[in-house]
Length: 382
Length: 252
Image (cartoon, rainbow over all chains, first blue to last red; front, side, top):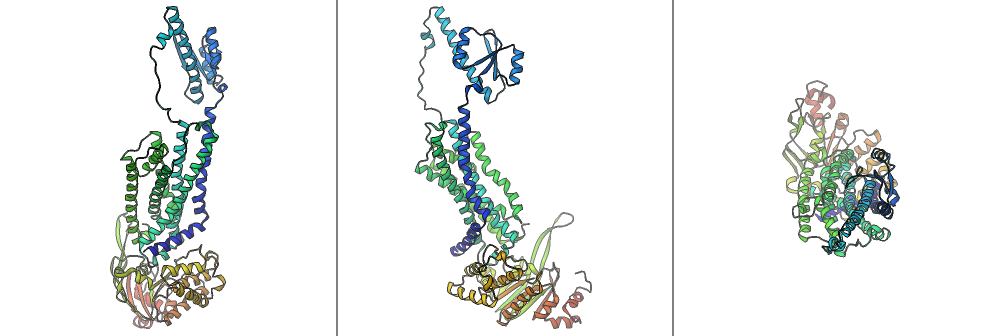
């Protein structure tokens, strides 16, 4: 049995290595990772370091006092004083970044939510908060109350570690999600080529006449496709680690963030990659072998490609945490475990459940494939 | 050595005009025996069930009913043993284009468990016999149709099979490429091999077949030597005999 699987594997590997498209899918897709990491890092850094002149033109519908003007100047606000209608028009024409109206003791900040408005609003809030504190202090002094006794009536000390760097966490999570995408793309092409492609080229009939069990043919094909996706996955992992290593030194957004995986975490990441490579290879072969042509197989595999990274993206957006049940759900579990690995919070039970769920899916896929290769469906597909 | 087919049948599902699923017989109750050193012709028009029949005998399709017995062994008993004794070549059979002729032949030797020392000697012999020295190390995709046909024959010979299953092997080939196949069939017959040869070229079959079964719409309509069939239908060639058997109509 092993001899036969080895012969099929040798045949498949030889074909894969000689096929430029398969080889490029296997090796070129991971090269996108450094671009992703450096590109996103540069983008976020640019956002963080945006000059104040980009968002400090603030409109006011009232004439502030000298004290207010001094505070605005210290904070960096470039004020524009006009009527509300004029301010509204200027805001629409993007001549100002935000405007503030005053009605008695109520100050209202006007604007439409976007990146510049958010930064401008933050500037205005900071100014108004400083001004409010100034007024409180003067009020208390006028009533002969020591301001410090009232303002600092409670002392609050923070003993909470700083929240995770949002930008760094975002980039790291997406870099790992990209590993999943790269593995999927890498598995799709050889899986299509070895099944529907072989059928289209007319060599499947020849293969089926060789003295070997359907099981050996399927295992040989499965191992070769898994090998391709594993090479992509491991190369991607290596490039993620290297990219983060270099990006950590180059960009301020990674300051005080530990980007390096420990050897144990690296081992866990390899385990996730191997499991996912097996799963996606099995699924791709199962789907593609039902198609009669390469083109048909590629169309059929498109939903599977989307399915492979949608759960991961949803998990990020909803900030899902790994649970026993989530660890059992294929696709979702790999992304969640990658997040746990980067956070250093891997639970061994979750890892075990992920492996078990992968094995169950692969066994079911194998049984279906063996049945399919034994029947005429493999030749005619209908 | 003897190949015995008994009541072999194969059904498929199809969707009829009323868009309902229905069963149809691609082959129905086929029985015959093929002996050593015999060329058994399987004749019939397109859609007669020849390809399905030969695919079942080659172990590519599973029969719905009946039995296939290679010298006392069935596929259920030992699929691997039977496949080692068979070579299957059809007009649709393609070979791995990215390999060279030599790589393909060594791969086939590996697949059929031919020992390395035997494989090397056998490949040398086949290459000389089929005059393939010039393109032995060329990629198959670069070969001409005739050269490719020789490679296809060579891959059938590497494991020295007892049975050759040839399905429309000369279909679509030019006169020179067809002759390569026909010469090969005659040589293997002389070596005592059993050859199942399907074709819709009746004249070709008449020239090389010892025994013939005529098929139409999945059924055997006549069996015998070419001369027996002609005699019983009172015709002078197998083509006329076939039309006589299906009721004189040319609409087979």
